[in-house]
Length: 510
Length: 115
Image (cartoon, rainbow over all chains, first blue to last red; front, side, top):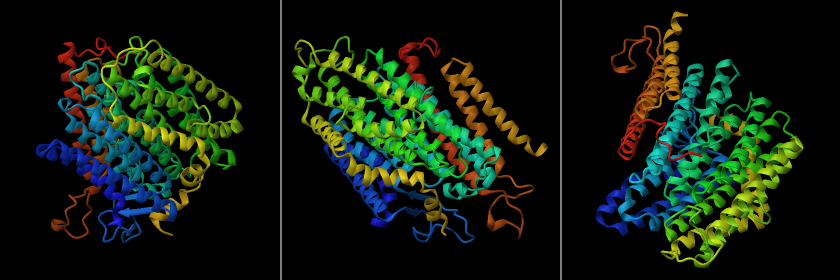
């Protein structure tokens, strides 16, 4: 049983999602229990995989072989589909599972039955399955299939509220971008298949020689994955999408952008790790700076709380790109500061998941209690919803990188690493953080301070539990970051930094 | 050179699709643009698998040592077509809903979400 944990995590989420409408036919409570059971089981599988990978190394799981360990078929060629879980994949899986465990109980309460709760839960589980698939797969075509699974599920969730005029519009826009991104990815895979006759990531990585076709594919991969990760200048779908999806499901959309970033790291470090040169790193660094700057400025002028938080979320993508980009620039010589910046960038993925997740839950709670998200109409909610106000404050400070919260712990690593490459990078990143602090101070003041106002409904305890879990996470990661950096982040960063040879050896043998 | 002609045609299809996305404003035409890119990529995949004078890759009926076309790209294309069907259907559904709300399919007139 435990031998099959990686595929069970994906398969149970997928089939469990499709089974949810059947349970709903019997009874709504049964369906809710089923969804919680499925999410719990997926969480346990992901946790087991993570513990196994962090203690014993890369876990290769082969599908369709005589045994799950039979990586190479006769002839020394990996023809079978396989899942290859290294420390970075396991780390990404943990982020996804953590947010799913927080988001689903929230969603059970948040989404009304007449809004089509059953289907939204099915789509949520489908999205989770796609995300885990992207994180675990070791096969490029499979990555494309899971990419499209997440695209379809995510867009259906974004355009879920078809009775509003904005949701279908946001969904159409996002779907257009996701489709182009998916097709560019497929074209890149096709180029590589045409050249090397294989789809296995490790096999192609071992064969890559840096021809013109390889570089063309790299450009297509970069374009496709940056588009899906909402990096500037193709970030414009994200605020619409985050703003329109039901708040609880926005958490999964946040993980969806992160897993696209994970795909980018996988392509850059593992697939192209052998032939990559510094200009690609500089490209990632400059896109990172552009993303954080543009998003912070756009957040300044927002009047909708949901869109404001969404721009805050996009700006955090910029920090991850900066951190890992510095690592890419330094990849050829492998000086220490490259690894420090990469640790920062990867640690920031976890921190961003917690802080942005908490912010979106707060937005959901505000909308629940007041029926609107417009900052011009909101105000004085701090009296009626003190817990939500406190959560929003903690999350905003963490997002802006104020010590001793978790955002600071990862940003200081990014600053430290990027400073050694060029102090200008650090200065720009700090500036963007200050701007974000101003933005969120204004949002907090606009929504929660001011004279007491009546609230329509009190916030249910389920919301508070979900938010409380994230607050505890933010505080723990902020107060004792060393423990998590040593235990989780360093192995994940090392897996990209130096782990390419190990990854290849785990699949190809020798 | 003539052997590369199918690949060139596929890339022309992809380029036409991208041009459609940039130049057209009607939502249905945008979906058609996505369809063009998709057809280009799918044809490219199938063309990659062709082996000169190859036969269908079915072992039961194959004469001994006959060259076969590669089966993998065909499997990939089939998967990709199914995925394309789902995305196209979803996008057209959204276009229908948008038309019901706005009474237009012109992307320039649908601008609730700007900035």
